[in-house]
Every structure is written in C-alpha cells, then in structure tokens.
Image (cartoon, rainbow, N blue to C red; front, top):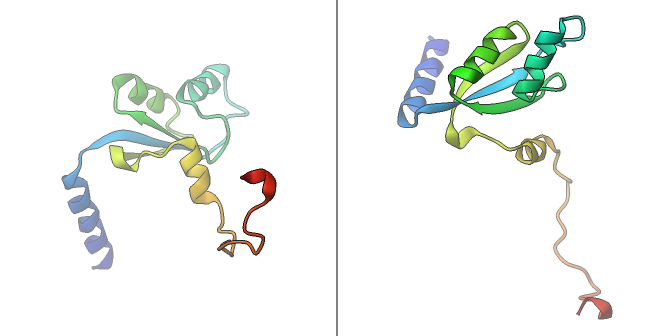
Length: 112
C-alpha cells in the first residue's frame, strides 16, 4: 500500500548515510513538572515549546531524552540534516514576495 512504499523509500535513503544525531523537539510544556525535569530540558538546550535542537548520538544525550520522553519528539537524522539555529530561522521565514534587481540611482556618491 501507499504507506509501505513511503516507509521503504525512507529506509533506502537512510542506508546511504548513517544517522548520527538526535533531532529533539519540545512538544509539551514543563510548567507544572518538577525542577529536575526542567533542568534536564535546559541541559538539552530546550527553552520553549516547538523548539528543535540537535545532539550527537551519545549515552548522555540518550539518558536525558529518556528522562523527558513524555515531553519531546525525537528523530534520528544524518549529519547533513543538522541545522543551526540561524538556518532553522531562515527555513521558517516566508519569502519577501519580490526580488530587487537593481536601482535606477546606480550608486550613491558616498558609497564609492
């Protein structure tokens, strides 16, 4: 069926490059939870809902994820899929809707 075909395509793509990072997204708020859970989220670098961070596969990161597994969504991704904070911001940003080709002024005297 259709879902099986898309699942097999994802598996083929992942075989070409090994998954080396965790993509962690905070889905639920930790407001009413204990201080230890909040500290674990801070240690992972998560401060607000829907924020995404990347961590290299390690026992430390896996342990922190297990402590807050009810609050986060985790994906295994290859190194080429890792995005910095500024790259994530640019991906979310809408296009301007226009592109500046040039100006009629050419250049201003003080810019030369």
